[in-house]
Length: 153
Image (cartoon, rainbow, N blue to C red; front, top):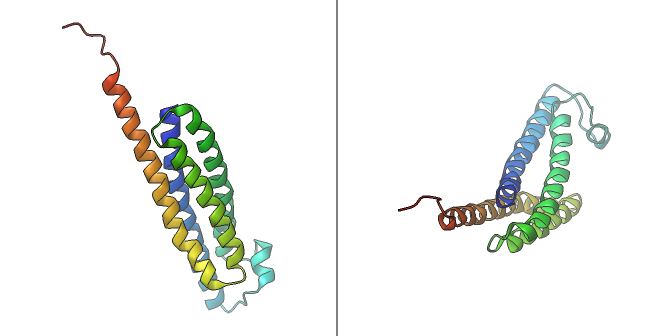
């Protein structure tokens, strides 16, 4: 269970990094779309297939939000069985941060400044995932150090 916890915890920063790449790709795609003389509208953005390269990035960014949410929930469940010191706390903090991130994304639609906080909070989520994975790594190492080797002196 400890290894499962560690993998799930490491998935959090990996997914966050991918989401950053996806949204950056979307913004650069939008830039090319506009540079080519097209008009960007809410309809084009919401259609998901407006013909600009950014549509895929936007869809993937949204899908990543769903995936990281599922990972956070599963991580919290696994935390109760993994017996990692601080494991439940880290998993709960990650899930709470995911909820905050969803709220910032929703509020960011009305306020670009809040949208900026959404980006900054992604760094917090990345760090929480790394801290949870570090706690798991330490717990795994401690378990191995305490396990009998099976050798006789």
